[in-house]
Image 1 (tube, rainbow, N blue to C red):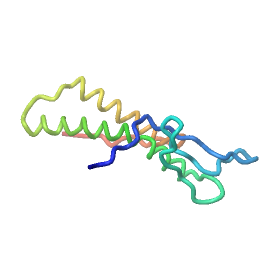
Image 2 (tube, one colour):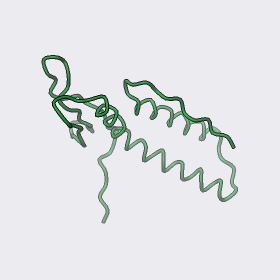
Image 3 (cartoon, helix red, strand yellow):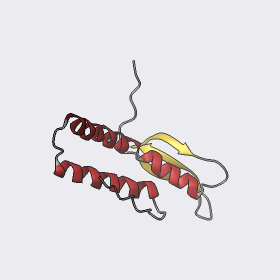
Length: 114
């Protein structure tokens, strides 16, 4: 029997804000349930914020990977790939990349050539 993950969406929540406005740690939550948290010291670092943003995209990333699998199977089987579905997939990937970056600078995606 395999365990099921907590359904998304997951969101990043800064916790225990100190007098200076800095969070002590960052939680990743699904509704009121804490799924995970990042904490390595007295206050949350930029790296912890980036890690939290990445963790929070896990449910969406799972769905994106499952849909990528259908594109791969179609390509292997020689079936045409729906261009509208491919555009939606790419837009979803771009949205996830922005969420991974959070408040930090977004790096441009590498150009894919065929």
